[in-house]
View: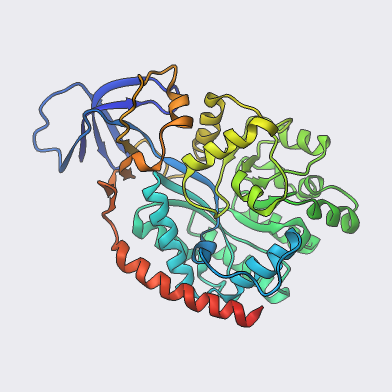
Length: 421
């Protein structure tokens, strides 16, 4: 049992502050006024002057892209979103080996932990290394100490054989694990594959995790090939019926599509920085309802940064107060709780070494999260009752050794991409 002594605890739902000692064990958290704890504490952390609160959830991640940082430009400079996918990400994912998948998971999990995220919702793709990839990724996250909700990105873009492998990988993984049915996007999916995915969703009482109207091309393709908008197509397969379903991006939607989403139990994930990077447009929550959470889309693993981006960019396109931005960050906990996913319980905490020059109160805490608190203030992280980050150092893995190996694998990945370009 871990003792966080003399802490200032922030209730992540109400932002209420209280000074107390916190006893943390797997599946259990107790709050006490100062007293002597005999024989029950294995580790004591002095939290005097520190803030303690619930850790974060990444609402949409792409661990498979972790080895792309710093790689060279593609042979052909992409002129639009489709070409970004074709010449960058669809070239990269086809070069991934099982070992690269493992290390992509490890370095992503390490980055998440150091940014205070202990639960990751990930969307994976490795079309030439499909079989067993989700289990590999799961073990990598668990080695670092993170909980997860994974899926494989099923798509028809690489041919029938790989489509079948994606469906089979999903089926096999969901037999033993919590997870979702991953789909790339409407424009790379046939009706046959959508129907097969819908059957898997029903079989495992799960939901889908799919990119939706990230670029106008998705809508254009859907109208030309299926005679309807993207969300209406998804709805026709029952994907919006599940409160576990995650619709990612949702930029280029009609009012009718927004209303369909608002009336459904499914969730939307906003990824501001990725939208900016790909120049695809700006997110608006108008007409989408309250089930909106934040992701990183593989750009990084820092949910505090994602919240700040959503807030500042949103001043022109989706205005919100600091408190609304804070709750959009925290909505992911509502998603995990409502759907009974394990791994995001009260025994997941971050300790913030935040020496504010101004008073910190329940009334102004949201402002501190938007304008002050950042990853640099994260000193300790507890995941499922286990101390995985102590004094900003990972306790579960050899970070230096993993990064050394990942750098060598990144070079191999980049060489493969040059050949396939």
